[in-house]
Image (tube, rainbow, N blue to C red; front, top):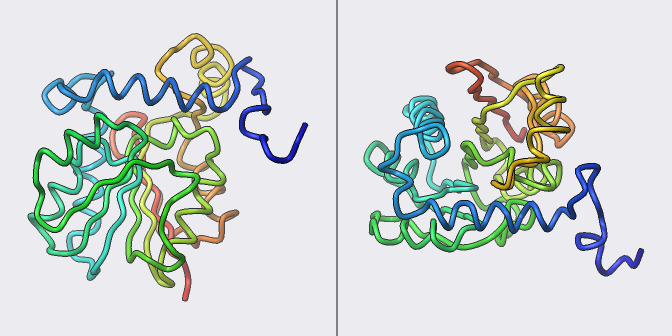
Length: 225
């Protein structure tokens, strides 16, 4: 295997290259983008809205000047946050159609760019808060995505991740059977304990971990000064 092409060459135990999962996610969300906000169902925006509202409530009283939303989709979270706290907001998403829908909202003080969570196009120490809602289970390289969030956060900044997932046997079935059959780009699932362990490994201090609703959880980490 040549060092210059690890992404294309690495094959997961599910029989796909990691790039395949990325392409599936992009196709899935490009197709959903036009009606994503309106269709409040499991396979569209229901879980995302629950996570976004939870994140908005968590940071309502936080003082911050800049926030990056990784996997921003149609900009639903940023649109909520702008109304409760003026700041510089940036949304990043793999899906070009999701970004197009976000830009159509013309959210004041917000900018949107295409990109991936494992290669965030910003310098070190750029943001006070990094958020990630209902997209982490689509990331082919979750550990790298977390490292990137840590890198672009300012010292003392918050990383807030809200997702849906389970551990144990349920997680094994999802990861080794169901996600193998799905064509929506889902890569992996874990519960909030698994996310907390990953955050700590990436350098964060976990300051809160809670179950929000059903299998939806939110975990918050801080990049220490």
